Length: 205
Length: 332
Picture 1 (cartoon, rainbow over the protein chains, first blue to last red):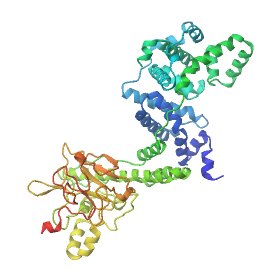
Picture 2: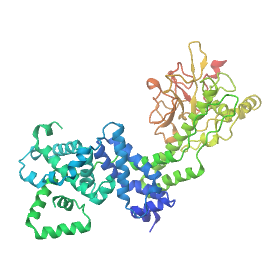
Picture 3: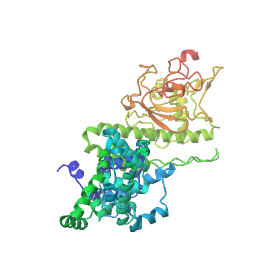
Picture 4: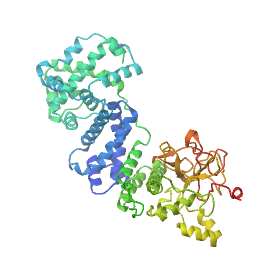
């Protein structure tokens, strides 16, 4: 197999191992491989194309600098998302847009007795504005409602639904327990459906 | 259970949890009903499922940024008394250059359609590095000369744009100047670098050799010819509070023998797609057209459309090595 084909087919972990051993072209393969996926995540998370591009580049600057901190054998994908998420949070902080997680939010999501049932909410919900729109308008409404979620909820929706990470991987990226990931996703969907059912506020998005 | 059903729908569970949910679904109709409801809960998110597309060649720019960040060591401008030796700026280590080059060059073998584009981007980035290092040398020079940059003179032997090079060499502000004067894309390398004394000697004793070497003294780059004030005196650039946006150095213009061949043509260094321009404040831009001086000024021609010193401070003219601020006929 030609060299170019062989390195392209290496798994992420092997690419990073080769890069750590001095095969610098492996780094380029890794950047290209994650271009669409990581940019897409950052674009959704940050809500700004220019900022997403900047953070994407900063992410791989960090990957290059910190490759010696990567533990061989660990999955690379969550590690990349961890760096990207930290860079995104830093970028939001510099813009004054990052919402620090409050203690009340932390407590409320851990108290099982206070977690409402998404199933019950949906079964008792009537039709809302989202049910009457299609195409680009529906997409814009959904996107705006996700962007309005608090950071700690938006992160799990993006990582779980749009980026397809497993709960365990999301827990690693966000440095929270798996149970918290599940709770936050659950809470995020409840919030989203509440916002989709509220006619005036949704239209204002 | 509801949270694990969500995870099951999103394929976010571990194998053991997923099997547990499957077993539950097989045995419990309530769980199956809940699954259907939760599936509907996720449906609206599908409206925005198309992933945002990255800008073209984002990955190449990311590599370029990594190479730029990790392969230069920028010295701080020393603030030393004039009579002390000026420390030489440290330049790229060879190992760093090889790392940067291997990242960028080898990746190009993986992307045949982007190979040429990657090479062009690499050349532009390295050319910009050259200009930034020139800025450091010019800054130190200005520190030693009351804020004045090297000035192209009105009369021989230093009345050519490339005369700034012997001035920087004399003060030992350029390390490996031959490489620094060569745009990686153009590969127009000066044959011989002259000191001020050599320039004077050649002009008097070997005028033909003087003319030949003057034409290549600045290598791939063009330098500011200065401007004439109301009294007709030739003035060079100096650092002023409002002067950060003045062009100082750039890829050389698409002219031969000092005569313009087109009012719109870019430097040939980067396949006529544009030119890297160093501004007095230190920033370097790749400009796809020439009207990037103050108020849209053409950086290669005066307001009269000639290769000559400007007619005021904002009338920037960057000349190739043998460009003269004042025509010889006018001097006589």
